[in-house]
Each structure stands twice: as C-alpha cells, then as structure tokens.
Amino acid sequence: MQDFIVIGGGMAGLSAAARLSELGRVTVLEQEEALGYHASGRSAAMFAETYGPAPVVALSRASAAHHRAAGCLSPRGFLLLGGAGEDAAFAQEMAELGLEEISAAEACAMVPVLHPDRITRAAWHADPQDLDADLLLQGFAREARANGAVIRTRLPVTAISRSVQGWKVTAGGELFEARQLVNAAGAWADQVARLAGVAPIGLQPKRRSMARLPAPGGHDVTGWPMFMGPGESWYAKPDAGKLLVSPAEADPAEPHDAFADDMVLAEGLARYEAYVSEPVTRVEHNWAGLRSFVRDGALVLGPEPDQPDFIWCAAQGGYGIQTAPAAAQLVADLVAGRPPELDAATVSALTPGRLR
Image (cartoon, rainbow, N blue to C red; front, side, top):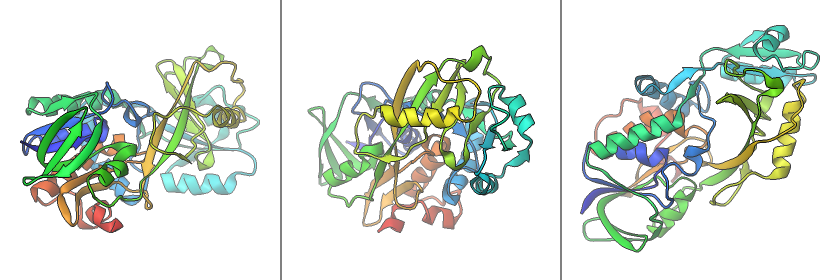
C-alpha cells in the first residue's frame, strides 16, 4: 500500500511526486514509454514572470529561486513587434507584459532578419529567460527517486475504484493501491477524474504547433531574443542554432498524441514571414502539443473539496513548466495541512473548489 499514486509522468506529475515523496511513499504511473512525452517535452519553454493571469504570475515568481538553483535558466530576452495598423494591439500587449518601447532600428539590430520597412513599433524586456525543461523534469525525477518514489512507464490507466483504505488503480494489467490519488494526467485529467467517479473540471486541451527552421540567412541566432507579433499571432525563438517558429494557435482538441496541422502551420509561417526579410524555404521538423485550460485560465491544484484524497495537479495551460516548482509545493502543503507560502487569495484562485 502506497501513500500516493500519481497518474502522469510529465512535469506536473514528477514535480508533485518530488514534493509528495517527502510526505510518504509514492508511485508514478505514466502511460507512455518515456517521461515528459506529451506537452512537457514539446514546449519552447521560457521563464517570464509577467506571463499569464495573476495566480499564474504568483506561481512563476515563487518558482524563480528553484529554477535558478537548478541551473535551468539562461539569458534570452523578449521582443514584441508591431506593423502597420497594429498600434492598439501592440500598446495593449506592451502594457500587459511590462515592456519598454524601443525603436524599430534597435529591434532590427537585435534580430538582423527583421524587415526594416515593415516594423513600425517594437518593445523589449531583458528579463525573460530560456528554461531548460528537460533539466527541470529530470531533476524532479531524481528527487522523487532519491526519496524512494517508484516511477513506472508504459502503464496506461484503465480502471480506478475505491478501496477501504483509499484507491485501487489498474494500469497495464497491474493493480496498484494507495491512500491518496494525484491526478496529473495533463490533457487526460478529466478522463482520469471520470474513471475515479469524480466530477470533471471542464478541461479543454488546445493544440499548439511548432516548426524548426534552419538559421535564417545563415545567421548565428544564438544571441537573438524570442520575438513575436502582437496578439501572440506567431512567435519565434532560437533553439540549438536553429529557429523555432509557432503559429501560436490554441485550437480545441480531444486528448491525443498531437501533431501539427499543415495548413495552420503554413498560415503561421506566413504571418512570421510578413515581418522578416528572409523567406522560409525549408522546415526541418514540425510537431504539436496540447496545452490544457479550464475556464479561468489558471491551474487547478489541490484536493477535491468533497473527496480530499483525490488531488488535482492539472490545467497547466501554457504555464506548467515555469510554475512547476511552486505548483508542486502548493499541492504538498495543502495535502500536508501546512500553511502555503502563497497568499490566501492566490491559493483560493488555484484550488479546485473555485470551479465547483
């Protein structure tokens, strides 16, 4: 008999396992053959403290110390661009993200492939940083294992039922039992809840696609910032000497092994091309991931109100990697009955009771 079964071996599940393994015996069940196979392994991860709604910003700020100590951060910076007719959207986003306006010429100096005749406005912030998602994920896995947690892969969950002492979970033909069940199943979190007889939270997975391009014009892109158009209609980010470009779509989808939609990708690349002087001549690779949201856009963390041995760690949206340390700590604090480090209003805005 375990103290916790964690369903999901992505960033949410492994970070929760690391913190909960300090409280008791943990088993993690992952349906794929590798950890972080879905959204956690497909993100162009950045750490930007001002990105997202207020509860997400609070989690991100509370996660910063962990990211720095783990060596997961490296300088990048962020550049917002605007073209003709985009002043209103540009100004709104610049204010929301706390950016400083710079000249179009300064922006073109940062990213030499920007088209000087098409960039009418630009804004910049030096603080956003690259976040090494795999380093963070493996660090949580090591912590959990060091505390005795068992992490199993290739075990899809097919049945969940109540037992006298807590929960029984059938996965990959094996039976597992624990006093408490942690739902960290990403896009599948509502399906897991239904298996357990718990009301779903209204989770909506949304697809986001990505293309990897050769360095435009043969430039060294290493020092370029992340850059995007207003309204997050596309974004681009250097990665290992290449350039990642996303149409930044948020198209509703059912839980599945996501793949890029060719037409959506082409439209996004065209939006990117409108700002640059180098056309896209080749896509080396493309992929997609599912970012899962509830109606208010914040994460869902902690025990189900009327079934406190069923614990949510879900709805990470586009913020799950940068918020993982503080999100997992909040889950552990709530499970242990400790006062959370976050303020009461933020905790209330993150716990599942707000959705009931």
